[in-house]
Image (cartoon, rainbow, N blue to C red; front, side):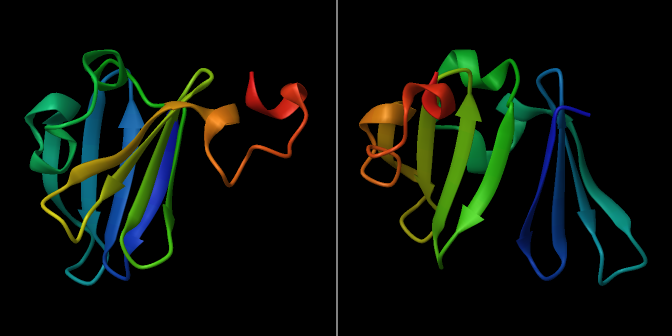
Length: 105
């Protein structure tokens, strides 16, 4: 597994080599999606290289869904049609701008 994240109380996501599995933990751990990351609607706006694999993911706040790949960050606004609210270097994002390059490269 490359990365995992909990999106909501019942929405657990697993990433591996450009694929995604979504598990509904409230419905006997039913797998509600198992396929290419690019085929899931949440990820339709992310850059093509991110669709090949995610290094880490986290849900930050109410609608701020962050995906990491190498030194790049994409922030998906899940309350605004899964639009991208940030795309670029981790080091350039306000949350991370005071970290040393050790953490952002």
